[in-house]
Amino acid sequence: MSVETTVDRARERVARERTWTAEKRTAIESFREVVADFETGLPVGGQAVGGPTTVATQSTTGGASVSAVLDAFEEHVGQYSGDHDDRTESVHAAVAEELSDEVAVSLCGGDSAGVLTPPLKQAILSTATKRLGELGVTVRALDREADSLSRAGETMDDVVDWLVEHNPTPLTDLGFDALRERHETLADHREALDALARRRQETVRSVTGGPEQVGIEHRVLIEYVYADAAADYPVLATAARFDDLCANAQRTVRRHLTLCG
Image: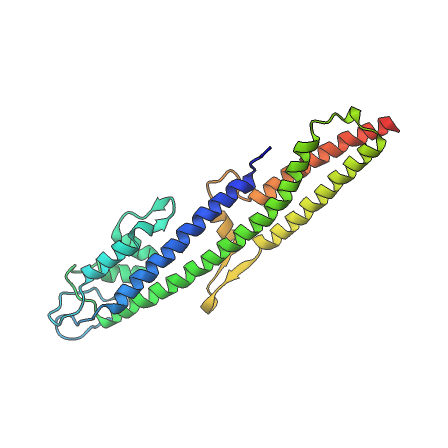
């Protein structure tokens, strides 16, 4: 008999989020490669002033246009902008979210025929590289969460399988030794659940790091992934529920042991 738990549903959710995040990272990497190949130009007057946040203006000196950059962004990143279930609507908002506010102003705040200047190109490449690092860390954090859920699932399955197998047997059919063995098995399950909860707390308090001090607190990841789920902390909630089941079963067994005695 198969019993689906909150942990099983959490594993499915994490797997979807991991796939989405990895695909988004690949999309941004493709966009960065396209921009890296673009030729730059200079705005009218021959100098790119104001640094990378300068709003692009029309050019007569060649180079890729701002619209070409935005087209590349839309082609590669557009469908992945925002969260898995909450897409960003405008191009400006999408660029701001996935790259930076400064790059969004430079690309979307001026003439669509403006030129890709050297500072602007460098700003796009730098922010894209930073975003790749962030998403890479997120993927690793999701892998850690998936591993934690997998190990938790093994413990949960052992408890569920035992309860399902032994629940139909009336305690009145069991002798003293069988009742004592059942009580001890339930105690073992409770110890396993307690150990699971301690390991899970360690995972929740952990931080997944990356290059240049980029890191993500696992607690933050959990709150994001399970924001609209039935339980914010599925492993701890399920472990507590199963421990209650085992504790109640132990109390019932003890009553029968007393009668046998």
